Image 1 (cartoon, rainbow, N blue to C red):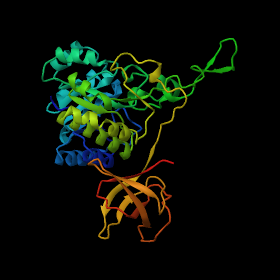
Image 2: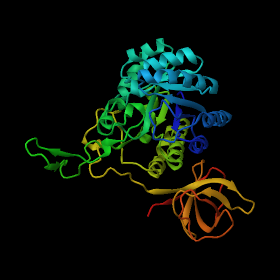
Image 3: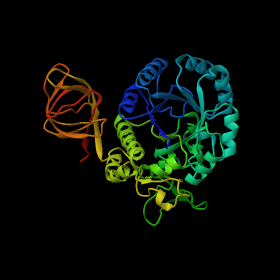
Image 4: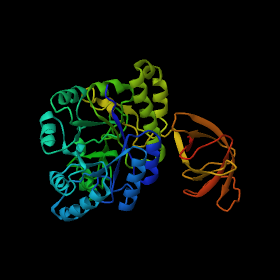
Amino acid sequence: MKKPELLIPANNIEVLKEAVYYGADAVYIGGEVFGLRAKAKNFTLDEMSEAIAFAHAHNVKVHVTVNILAHNYDLEDAKEYLKQLGQLRPDALIIADPGIYALAKEICPDIERHISTQANNTNYLTYKFWYEQGAKRVVAARELSLDEIAQIRANIPDDMEIECFIHGAMCISYSGRCLLSNYFTGRDGNQGECTHPCRWKYAVMEEQRPGEYLPVYENERGTYIFNSKDLCMIEHIPEMINAGIDSFKIEGRMKTALYVATVARTYRRAIDDYLESPDKYAANMDWYKEEIKKCTYRGFATGFYFGKPTHEMQVYGSNTYINEYTYLGIVYEIKDDGTVRTEQRNKFCKGDEIEIMKPDGRNVQTKVLGIYNDEGIEQDSAPHSKQTLYVKLSESADVYDILRCKTE
């Protein structure tokens, strides 16, 4: 069996490094322009250069999103941006717009071109079309079943790659082509500025009764009529591989380092276990399912992979995430006395029992013995976000380990 690529998102250099250490084969990132996650922090050109160098030093590829649907006024700036990317030499560009694709083919032809899911790739003739244009890979529309993907695999050239989402948030609109955000707020989701109105509460107003708002209920379960569960295929690695998928993509370019590390580590182990032995994969299933819930999620479903989703794909009662573990920080340095340097992300206190999350799959329970600021003054708690702290733990940690605790 061909080993599929595990493709992980990152919105800054810190998250990218965690993705690399926790098991990514490739990472996809966005620059400050021309990507569909404008609200994410994203990478400056200098940061992108550093990210590519770091990833390549660890034999990990970097894909850069250039996947907006461009207007006329975007094209001149897009040309300049593609020239800059040509100098940085990422491994691939993810593109949705045929015009941007033509520019990339002309300006930086040596960089692989991948076709974004935004291009509505739902049949094998579409894949063949892009192959004839020189595309190396097509990202499948999320509306495809595994049977349809297998049919595509059987009808395209062997050296053309298929990339599919395996985990993460699902868009309520067809292949992400949504106009709600633009209509309600003037911020265009297809220009990278989505405000996620699919997660808002809605009511119905009868035309002859203006001002009377009737809440929308689904059997008294709630009002979030566009609020889908997250995709999770951790139990279906064999089916994904058998369908002929070359790259397993994790959604989440606006997620934290804890989310990225948790999902990357879990899928890395699941894929490797299955390729080593299907029996080993089956035996470790409880561990995968337990670990994947230690990052934020809205409940899990299998999307369109086994047929069209039913009402069970929806979350009716809330638009908030389930959050079983709290992100405390990343270990950046180990002092001679074993104290770790971190940048605090959520509050914790001296005496707390927390967890050291390691790339090799271990979760080490430890106690916070002391907390010190950068002047060496001890404090009882860490209440200030992004404060540099030196923390003494009862167990050993390593650089790039993640500190987390169970949410109360």
